[in-house]
Image (tube, rainbow, N blue to C red):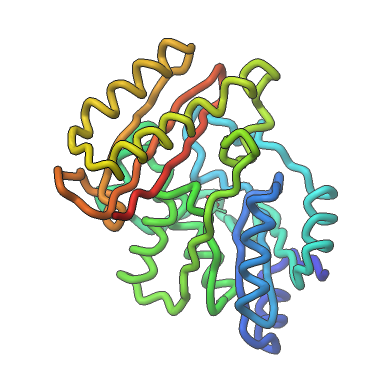
Length: 277
Ligand code: PAF
C-alpha cells in the first residue's frame, strides 16, 4: 500500500490507475470501514482510502481536537484489507488558507435531523467530499448507511452537480448486540456500552410496527424517546421519514427510514433502520 500525502502525487498516480473506487474516512477505522473497503475492492481495479479529520464539519464544542488519530493501527488494517493507496494529507494541503472561501451548500435538508443539532456540519461534509472527489477522481465511492443523512446529501450533491461518480451505499455493520459500529463507540464507558444497544432496539421495534402497518408515527417516536430518556439518554430526535428524500413521512408511505440521534453521557450516537414495504 502506497501512502500519498500530496495532491500532485495522488493525481499523478490516478492518471495511470484504471477503474478507481474511493472510501473517504476520518480514520480510527473499525469493521464498518473495512466493509466499505471490501465493497470497493469488489467493484474496481484499485482502491483509494483517505484519512482526513475535516475541521469544517465539526461545530464549536464538538470533538475535533479529541477525535482519535490512530494512524499506525489504521495503516495496518488498510494494508491487510488490500487497499492500494492511502491518501493522508496534512490539513494545510487541503485547506492552505485555513478558511475555505467556496463551500458546497446542501439544500434545506442540511438543517434537519442531525443538521438541526450540528449547524454547518453537512456543508463541511459536502465541501470536503467534493474536494476529495476532485483530487481522487474516482469512478465510484462507498459510503455507509449508518450516516444515512450524509449518504443522502452526497447522493443529491452528485446528482445536482453532475459529479461523474457512482455512490455505493453499504449496510451498517453491527456488534452482536445490535449496536451500530462507529468510531465514537470508543468514547463509551463500560456501563454506557452496555446501555448503548437500546437505541437500535427501539429502531428495530419501530421498524417491526411499521412493517405490521402502524401509521401513527408520532406515537412510535414518542414512546422510544420516553424510554430512552428514562434510561438516562438525552435524545436529539427519533423520527420516521421518507427513505428516498428524508422529507416528513405521511401515513401510507411505502419507503420509510427511522432515524435517531441521542447522547449517552458525552457520546452522541446515531443510527437508523430502513423500512421498505
Ligand atoms: O463519514 C465520514 O467519516 C466523514 O463525514 C467523511 C465522509 C469522511 C467526510 O469527512
